[in-house]
Each structure stands twice: as C-alpha cells, then as structure tokens.
Image (cartoon, rainbow, N blue to C red):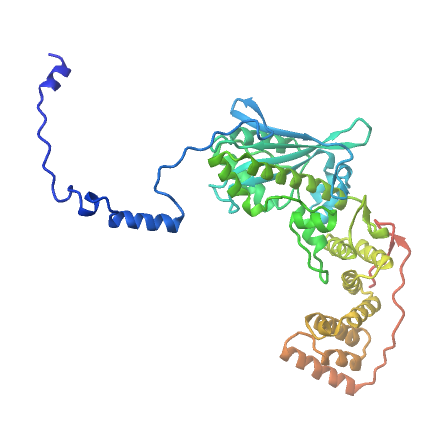
Length: 471
C-alpha cells in the first residue's frame, strides 16, 4: 500500500465547537468597528501610516536617468560621464587653472608638505552622496562623483572629465567600490571638501564590509580646511563656509533648483520606493556641481598670491580678509617673512582691518614693535563706539598696554590703555593697573616714538620686500 493510500484512510477529528475566545463579538457581528480597530486607526493617524496593503512600487523607466550600464565581474556598474571643455566655468571662475595650480602653494595652505611634490593634473576629485550623515556601518554611498583632468588638443590646456556612479539597488555596491578603489590608487593626489572627516572614512568602511582591498591613498587636499584658514581669519566678516556658500560670494554662482544636502538621503530612499527619477536628477546635478566647484577652488588657491587688482583669479577675486587668512597660515607653516610681505602688499592695495591685525601680530612676532604699535593704534581708532567698548576693543587695548609698557617704557600711556579695560578679568586688570601706577610714579616717561623698522630690501616668494626678524 502506498503512503498516499495510507493517508487517505486516516480520519480527521471533527472541528472543535466555537468557544468564547473564537466567537464573534457583538461589534464584529453588527459590522461596527471594534476597540482594537479604533486603536489601530488612531495609531495610523499618529504615525502617518496606513493599515491597507501597500501598493507595489512604480515601475522605473531605465532611460530617465543619464547612466549607462556596464557589466563587470562584480556585477552591473551604472556610470554617467560628462566631458567638459577648457572654457568651462563655475560662476565667474574658470575650471581649467586647477590642472596647472602650484602644488607648493597648495601644500602651504593645507599645511601638508607631501602635497608639494604632487602633480595637480593627476588629481582625483571625489564627492559622495550617502544614505545618512552619521557615517556609521549602515551608511552607504549611493552616488559617487569623481573628476580627472584630460589634456586638450592644445599643449598645456586641460578639460575636466566628471564621472558619476549610481547605486540602483542596495546590496550591489561592490562594482562601484572596486572602481573607486582603482581610481584612488591611480591618482597623484586626492581633492575633497570635508573628505578627511566624512567621505574617505565612509569609503574605507564600505571597502572593508564588501571585502574590497583598501587602495593606497595619495596625499589628500581637503579644501574645507583650506577654506576655513583662508576665509575666516581673526577680525574678518562672517561668511558661509559651506561649499554652496563659497560658490555664491567667491565664485558668483547661485544654484537654482538645487536640492539641500540635508534632503539628499531622503530623496534617494524615495526614489528607491517610487521610481521618481525627477527627484534623483536634482541629486545627480548637485553632486556634479560639488565636484566641479572643487576644481575651480584649486585653481584659485593654487595661483600665485598677489593682492594687486583684488587678486584676480580669472574673474574670481580674493578679498583683503582672505589675504589675512593666507598670511596667518603661512606663519603656521614657518614662512613668517613671506606672510609679512603679503600683508604689506595687501595693505598697499587697500585698507582691511583683518590684514592690518594680521600684520600687527606678525610684526610683534618679528620684533618689529613700532610697526605693531602703529597698527594696533590704527585698529583701535577705527573701531566704532560699540566695538571699542566690547571684546574687540579690550583685546586691542591689552596689546597696546603691553607695547607701551615693555617697548616704549611709557607707563602713563600703558595705564591709560589698561584703564579702558583689557578683558583679562577683574583681578588681572587690577593687578596690571596697580603695577603701572607704581611705574608711572617712580620715573617719568622717557620713551619717544621711533620710526617704524626699515625693510631690508630683499624679496620674498611673492616678489615683495622682506623684513628680517630683529634680534
């Protein structure tokens, strides 16, 4: 007898009678909603969800986004290529000078000597769009934009080639990661905007989780640090240091219809669910502009610094405040004489409180105390009444009190400055005033104002006279 025949002879027990637990409630029998149904409806209203079956995702038209499909051993790779021209610009700034930027100047601004030996024409520009901003192991780079330089037909000219790689399905990121790892290994240097803190750590995590060999990374120029040093010196006006902000006030570009970076992840997840390609087109263009802007900024930061004519970089111009930031960065790099020469030229071209403050601090460090004294006096005199009585005035009075006391030996002038407030705190200010009162009573002021220290006539990196540090 077969097994099927045996099963046919088995008699099933009768179904149990309905119990109280299985009987319909009066509400269910009458068709009225039960308490459980009411609670579910209330939760749906609060959470913005629906208990109805989900509708299937909209079918995606594969040709709506401008990506070509390439077959690789690791799976499909979706790539978009934009071949630029040598006349391309971001706003009013040409892009092509980024290929011939001076690596030694970029190294000084980056405070990274390794960049000085790199060839900017072999740089890889990189920017990622991700499913979150936390950078944890669950965050995925769904769109990676890269750019490289390609030599134009004319000798010495370049065009920027931008390529973007899109993750169309979560879990299929290995082809993108292998391609990015190959590009990083081939580059002479990396250029990012906040890549040291976000993009590269994220990619390293994805490499490890997908068992992709980590590439050997070349020197890394992170433009966010350069921008903070150059565009936000002490005494300068506050300006946005986001990439889109720098585009507006430096490059003269205001993006129209751009998607904010904070909404990029939500736009991608919406695209995965709905197939709405219009939303993703905005994300793709946002990424392309980020990469192109980095190339334009390298051309500005890596051109010879000269304040003449507003420091024209094509048509994009650095301001006096920017030269104060460059001067302070040069001082940190050990190029204090070049820094001083740059501030001298910048002040010759036009007055800037940030540059004058930078020159005063440099002069003080170089023992050119007469120059420092005159600059601090000018800064204090130029403050409006509110600033003179605030923290800015306190800081300048403290510098002047020190110079009058120790350099000029003029206790009376030092006391006058200290009496206006120095921001040191009540106890320290009282101590300084008492000491100056004793000095003023003990001896008359003997110091007389000397002429500023003379220049020595030598030239600097910028073709400017250099002042040697006085012993």
